Amino acid sequence: MSAEPTVLEVDDLVVHYPIHRGIVGTVTRQPRRMVHAVEGVSLSLQGGEMLALVGESGCGKTTTAQAVLRLVDPVSGSIRFGGRDLVPLGSRELRPLRRRIQVVYQDPYESLDPRFRVRAVVEEPLLIHGLGGSKSERSAHVEEALRRVELSPPELYLDRFPHELSGGQRQRVAIAAALVLEPEVLVADEPVSMLDVSVRAGVLNVLDGLRRDGLAILMITHDLSTAARFAQRIAVMYLGRIVEEGPAAAVVRNPQHPYTKALLSVVPRRDPRDRHRPQILQGETPDAVAIPSGCRFHPRCPVAIDRCAVEDPSLAQPASAGDGHRAACLLLPAGR
Ligand code: SF4
Image (cartoon, rainbow, N blue to C red; front, top):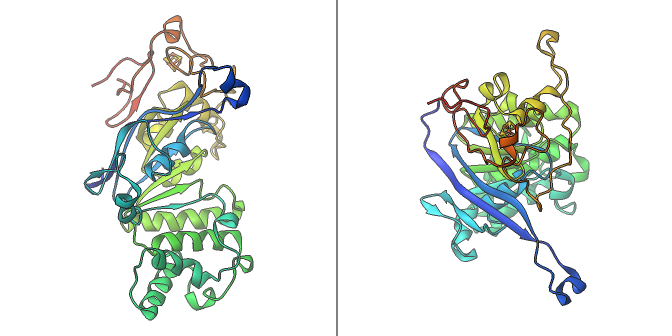
């Protein structure tokens, strides 16, 4: 494992959203219902590492990322970054720290202002944060950021509008606009899911290169095969909890949790000897308002036993897994 220092540490994070009761609900004083989006998530991220947070939509992975970016307020838990806990900080104290944790969103068609040329898009974060020095110094930063995302030579792109770029080039511009602030952490929220398949690998290779240069990347994805190829560690989320985590190769080759096994069973494999029968999960789709008792996966788990409806398993290293590989399942005999 890398000896790089830990740059981000999330501990026991909880995020709930209230559901609007409407006028009738308020007048009749119906109890307020909550979406239990994130329920006790802990993770850490080192410099030069990509951690993939994987799961179906609604599992809480994007809410976890939004909490790390302090775009939503956690109910409890801590987010340690730059020697401070971000959770209790107000907007003024967060401002200098925001520069150091940047985000790239899923849709480069929405995230770039169509009225701005590439030069202005990438320069704008410097202006907002009052960084980058003189106009010519800012230009040099903009050009360097474009080179780092392999939009080179930058002169070819600086004066183009977003509509004159391909989807992959737009996403590279969005990454450059994040990089120009020289962040330590990049949150990449489904960074290639809106892109044509033919350009996805190029954008992921750019992220991989930035990671090799020392950037810490928290990648949110529903795609385990992408996570397996590019991430160093994978954390699998289900209904607001991490149910399995570990080195990417170990999670993919030796999955422990029944949910991870089901996700992996539908990932296309090149090697026919490596193919498994797709395991389609039965039961209700997860509802973050009404969390099942016991193990929250039990209504859909193909190997659940009676205890699973009562006991809530915690993450632990099973005997059948290696170092740093943990899963939350009552059927897994404990390892070390
Ligand atoms: Fe399935 Fe039970 Fe393990 Fe949960 S604890 S994953 S329901 S076997």
